[in-house]
Figure 1 (cartoon, rainbow, N blue to C red):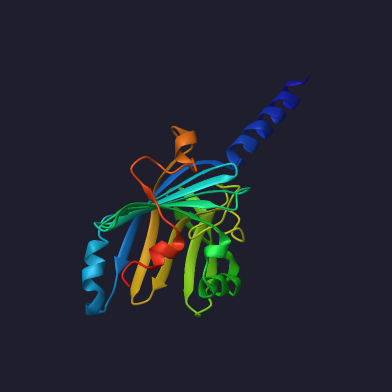
Figure 2 (figure 1 turned 120 degrees about the vertical axis):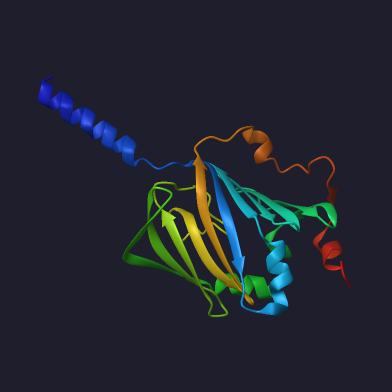
Length: 222
């Protein structure tokens, strides 16, 4: 083999490594909530210092949303399984739910079906050192969410509140409007490894959590 051929092969190999996608890891995001409406100021204050974590590996995903002083919601899903595990840890105690698509109400199902995703060509932005492309999500209510995603990190299983199968990569920045509040989520750390992966993606109810049905949860506050 000539030196030229060897160098060419080496450069190709390193190029492939440089542009290969990360398909496993953990991303941490700061969550910023704001509003101009005084009627929700107390809620906004309680959301201060909120944090979002997304774990992904193969066909498994997990999101942990630490909602300021109020509660932490955790959702674990596996692509082949029709049931996701949802954990709530807050003022109501430690509650676990096994959730399927049948548990989704008609309003939520219709909102997802009417949701439109538009990938914007020609606009890029750097977030956390990654070049991100822009996507717009238009909800059934007409509200727009803006997503900046990188194709350098691509979970195989993209489904749920923060991952979308129509967006070919991992969101590193998201802005959306929820009622009278504006929310901005910005990534600040990515790790390509997950410690205790079996525990992170386990669909077993953890010790200390009480399993409840969706009907039981709907009865709260009545």
